[in-house]
Picture 1: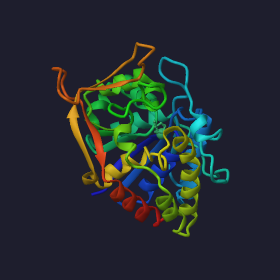
Picture 2: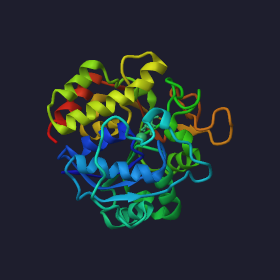
Picture 3: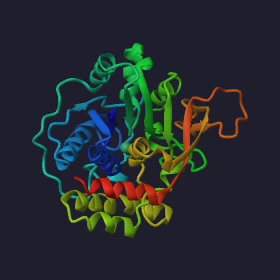
Length: 311
Ligand code: RIB
Ligand code: CA
C-alpha cells in the first residue's frame, strides 16, 4: 500500500535531498509538491522544486507555487545558509517542466477533499504558511489529513536562527500555532533529532561514489550546505534536516520520540517561534505532537544512499 503525500517545501539543499528520497521510494506516491517562501523567496523555491524534479527524471510531477510571505509577518530568508539561489552548489539547468497554474493552497484543499479521508499525509519541510492557510480557509480538510510529518522546532538543541527558535517555525510562528492547535496528528522532526543526522566526509563520499548524476549533485549540494554549519558549530558535517521527514515515512523504526504537548511562542520578540515542548510532562497541557528526539544516523544514511542510488 503506497503512502500518498504532499511535500510542502522551500528548497533549500536539504529539501532537495528530501524530495529526491521521496521520488526514489516506491512506497511513496507524491501527489504534488507545493512551494512556500522560506529559505529563499517563492520565485526561487518553486523554480528549485522543478529543477530537482527534473534531476530525478520526474518532469511529470505537479509543482505549485504557494504563499510568498508568512501569514502575519515579513519574510525572513536564509541565503547565508543556502546561497543566493537557495540551491547553491551544483549547476542545475533551468527546468522545462511547467509550474502548475493553481495556487498551492487550493491544490492542498482540493486534494484533501477529493482523496479518501485519512489517506494523505502532509510533509511540510519549510515554514507552515501554506498548510495553515489551507486549514484556516477550509477547516473541513483538517479531519481528512492522515497526519502531518514536519521538519521544525527545537527543544534540547535550542534554536538555529535565533537563540530560541528553529528557522521554519520562526519564519511563520502564527502558522505553526494554527497547525499545532488544529487537532491533526503531528510528527515533528526538530533540531534535536536532525542535528544527529550529520553529513560527514565519508557519507558525502558515498554520494559521490554512486557515479550517477543524482549522486554527484547530492554530493555538491551537501558540500555547499555543510560549510555554514561546520563553521558555526565546529561539527563535522551539516545536519540533513528535511530528509528525516521522508525517512520516517519509510523506516519509522530508525527514530525515537515522545508524544508531548508542544506550544509555539507567537508574541515575545526574544523567543518568537520557540517550540515549548513539555518533554517531562510538568503541565496538564494535552499532548499534541510526537516530538522526535533520536535517530539511528548510520541507518538513516544507509537508507538515503541506497534509495538515491536508484535514481
Ligand atoms: O532549520 C532547518 C530548516 O530550515 C530546514 O527545513 C531548512 O531547509 C530550512 O528550511
Ligand atoms: Ca526546508
